[in-house]
Length: 317
Image (tube, rainbow, N blue to C red; front, top):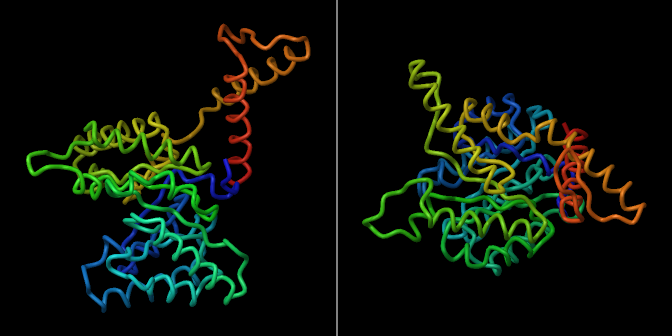
């Protein structure tokens, strides 16, 4: 894992429309791991006035508000809507030192990513910032992007995560006769490729935004069902190998934080396995049983990884 410790905790990416100041200010207080101020799907297409408002809001909220431990990311418009990277130029030039990273949407080309990385290096240098201080998350949202997911993930050590854009991906691959459903084999195939590409590159994979929105405006029974359905979806993302999930409201945020947590019991079990294996290795044995479970070199390495990750996450909390 090549991701710096403070970028390992990405259980939640809380997304807010960058043109609505009230939502941005509220996002700073909710305790998300990553705040994503969105200029892409959240803005009307080709509305220059809303683009100006969104840029202004990002600059002001990032620079004037206390985000505590929440990482500050923004999502600019993608290449088809902003071929000159003007959103990035304007925001990084104004407040580069306040930005932890950006989420680049609808990426389908290593060449575009190369140009983006070169621009960020130039802007960092101009602003006197450390090289690669502004990190990247890349949104995988099409068949083309899935085909080059590993190339994208491994291109730059500036990149810290891949995010699945399930709805845009569905639009790129489905026929008019197919209805979207979360467990469709095409979506699961894309999820597997994203998780594998991210793991191979040593970065994190983040699951998509859900269509299930628990809300305080719902009656008690409806809210409970929505919370259970969303929690089930989040658990499935976790089981798939994702490290976190995109969310759009506080109810989703709370559930995601509960789901994407390493159970203390698992950490303690891993510690016992690591200690027992290392002791056994000194006696010339490479396999043993711990609490009735086989521990060999592969399981030792997995247990060791859990222990090390738990330490890093606790330190960053």
